[in-house]
Image 1 (cartoon, rainbow, N blue to C red):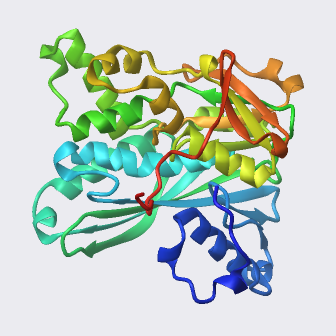
Image 2 (image 1 turned 90 degrees about the vertical axis):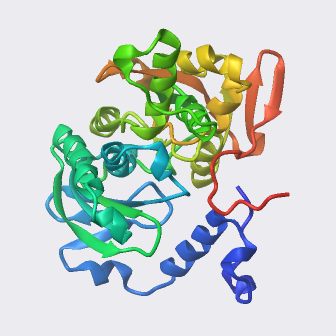
Length: 364
């Protein structure tokens, strides 16, 4: 992560002068300077965690915490209309926010969906099919849609999804609790979504599975990992209920970037063992013929939406082998901050820079 100077030194600087994460940190500091932020909520609740994690946490006075997150999908930035189907897009719009709630160790309860679409989209079946995808996923996790907004957009589709979840008081898992000696674990497998995105950009499209050969079915599955991601809600609930993880984050920007986020918040370093990374077998099978590097996609590819967890070694034995059929793998260890963030591949060790997704990345 880039260093951030004191806000007073940045009075004349615009958002264009810094990257998005430094800008978020500036807003976070400014918000933290506001007086009486806890009292402003109400006499019944206080703000336990604000800007800087996967979700905000509001501490209630009934033994429960409310966890709140929001995510936006913008056409031609986060998706392309010609590459996906409305039902899949609806699924993804909700799934990315469910993933943030899972990363806090909470149970998702309610959702609000705000959508802006051009007139020609409103006049088609697109919005209705989009909501079919939303409701299908919401029903799986017993999430209730309780509000939102519809608006005319001039050219591009914009979808914003807010999800509220719950956990027991104090059980929300932040990014900031990792300690040297904790083991690094990741759920599921890595790299398939990024591979799917690259295949979409090269012109690949979903084909009828019933008529497809094994190669086409493999490509279809990689495409679906990007177009229809799965939030690890079950694993999040286990981590929160059993208090297994000291820190957790979902892999939306990519393992390298999200590990940097976790380490920055926890003031620690880390080492990742490349040979232990659960690279998706489909990725290895398909990408060799398409000049895609499985290790680089696993390290830097975004939108896996797996959970990256720091777990003390004494709690590792309590980890289930699988939750909802999804395994978990130990991929490294938390180190002292002075050790930095590194990758070990046999005898070779190198610094792991944050190379994942960034909206406002500067070229050159």
